Amino acid sequence: MKAAICTRWGPPEMLKVADVKRPEPRKGQVRIRIFATTVTVSDCIARGLKAPLLYRILGRAVLGIRGPRRPIFGIVLAGEVDSVGRGVTNFKPGDRVFGMSRWKAGAYAEYVCWSAKTLLAAQPVNVNHEEAAALPYGGLLASHLMRKAAIQPGQRVLVYGASGAIGTAAVQLAKHFGATVTGVCSTRNLALVESLGADAVIDYTRDDFTRGDERYDVVIDAVGRRKSAAALLRAGDVLTPGGKCISIDDDFPKINIDDLLLIKRLAESGEMKPVIDRTVPLEEIVDAHRYVEEGHKRGNVIVRL
Image (cartoon, rainbow, N blue to C red; front, side):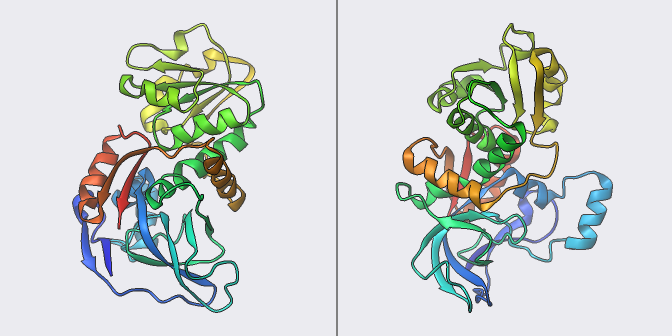
């Protein structure tokens, strides 16, 4: 089968497409024929071991000194169950599934074997494989933020980085939970964020949300502190008494199957729209990684297999 493998830790050029052996499902696993995956920011961070020095040292010790011992990245997939291992009862061959695995990876390939207990669910019935692949990463991480912020009906919520994979999901989930939502993004993404249900949008290239008159119960940083640090330094100035500012970088996101099932239901009802910046073939994985690392993608970059 075809797969994109990471030959060494480093820049996107360390990825190459190669023929590798198709995996066989073990007990409790399902083998999935993958039709679409997503290049996430997490993939790029992992490929480059972009972390503080101590974590880089530990990462090399655990994951591989010069390059990853498990060279096939990709934590998101949409596809079809091809075969199942012994003891699997919740999936059968032919099931269309989508999901995400934080630990196993392997989705930059035509086939992967994942535990049947990982975050996998039947695809929303009204989307294709590429649209299904655009839902789990941003949707699950945004669900973590919603839960941490304890979003309530009537609250005023500002989403900083509202046009990325996590931000587009956060806008839609906050609206689902009854909040009044303001999205912060660049000029070219204002219409997109409005189309997702934002009640107001702020162009960060022209206006500083921390200098406005509006006050918010929750400020959500959906892009991470490497890009948001300067803007969020003054976020406390626009919070209501008892308000909170939370970042996707504050802790390790906790995600679960109930979140994925909620995303599925919202996609089927039309409350959550998959946002795709571009779709590329597996052979363009290096360019896809370069583009994601630039930090200006709209929603998700999908890889078609």
